[in-house]
Length: 142
Image 1 (tube, rainbow, N blue to C red):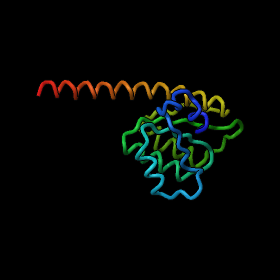
Image 2: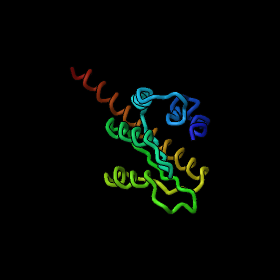
Image 3: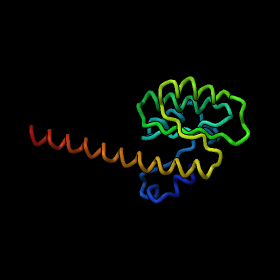
């Protein structure tokens, strides 16, 4: 996923930078906190394997008010509920946060994530432009 994000044309212009927090070796809680503090958008992929890190990342992103892009990845044949499926229901869907999917293949998931990131980045750029205009108008009025 991170490689797909980093190879997109927008990524080369430094708009996107994928950070795969969970699987980097040696990371501790403070490193995750630091990465999340620098994030502008949270992309969460909820799979079958129980992951305390994913739960923590989601909670930090939610507390920071980040735009949340949440995806359910479930390979065909998996029907038994996992700890992550319970988390999805109890903490994400219960707050009426949109969950995209379930996606059964990695290519379909990657396509959805890249499309949604492009849309979200556009919205963030528009928001930043509105803020700059407001600041400029207030300076002129002062």
